[in-house]
Image (cartoon, rainbow, N blue to C red):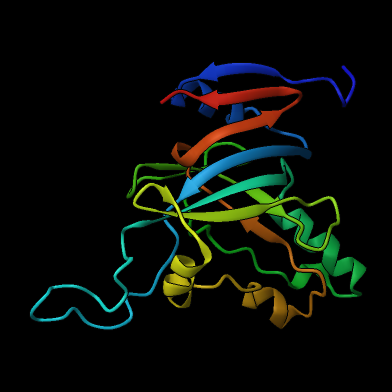
Length: 197
């Protein structure tokens, strides 16, 4: 199948999508779209009269992310390879337990406390072919710049992992692990999987 060929579209249930993701074993590119609750600060304590936080958008905002990522690569191998490129000793990297959950496959983790499956992907922000884009919706409605500016200050910004900085890694490995239930569609191996509502 040529790269320009339109992907086959398949409607899948959560369990079917999970099975597809569990089978990812080799490094590859995927396109996807998912919706998450962004990390936000409350802006302070609740008002004793209104019961509201200073950030009146808490619980109302959703982040819609779409774009191109890679998946199927070992995080530890990616770190160690980058350390070698940077002239660092890869044997000094200490592997820590995942905070997202236990791996049930190469790219899928499961957290028994939250009963949540997550899918591990890598973003490459400096790659010109990286087309990851995020937009926000409030109360299920698209928003304009004025509304965004009202809650932008409360969004928790993602930063380069401090452990990688401390090791001296020049090109950090940036992972995302969205919950599988948050995916709306994923394109893998020329098949576009659309999650059923």
